[in-house]
Length: 153
Image (tube, rainbow, N blue to C red; front, side, top):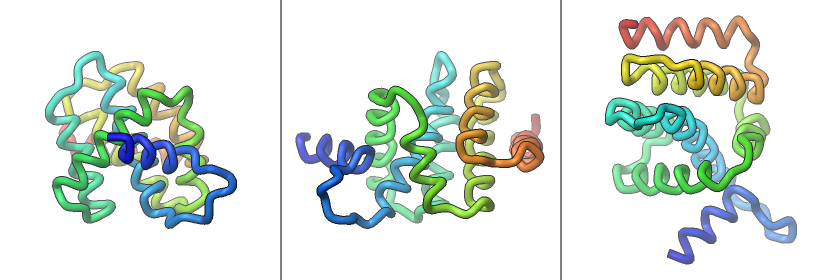
C-alpha cells in the first residue's frame, strides 16, 4: 500500500531533485483523473459512467483490465486529494497536441452523457477543464455535439 501511495504522489507531484521519469504514467494518471472527476461530478456514479471511463482509458492507452482498474483507483485517490485540476491539465498541455486534447474533452462529454442525464455541474466542470486545456470554444462545442449524438441524446 505504501508503494501505491508513493507512486501516486510521485506521479502527481514529482520531487524536483528526482531524475526525469517516463511521462507515460503521469499522462495516464492525468487523463484518468480528469475522466474520473467528470464521473464523480454526479451525486451518484452510474455503472455506465464508470464503463465509459474504462472504455476511454482502454482505447487511449491499451492497458490490461487489471492495469485499468489500478489506474482508475489511483485517479480516484488523486482527485480526492487534489485542490484543483491544474496539475492534471498542465501535464496534458505539456505533452499532447490540440487534437489529442480535443479528443479527451469529447471523451469526458461521453462520460457525462453516459447516464442519460447532463447536469449543470458536469457542464461547468467540462467548460473549466476545456479552458485549462486551452481548447478553442468552437472545438469544445463540436466535441460536445459529437458526444451527444453518439449517446443518442
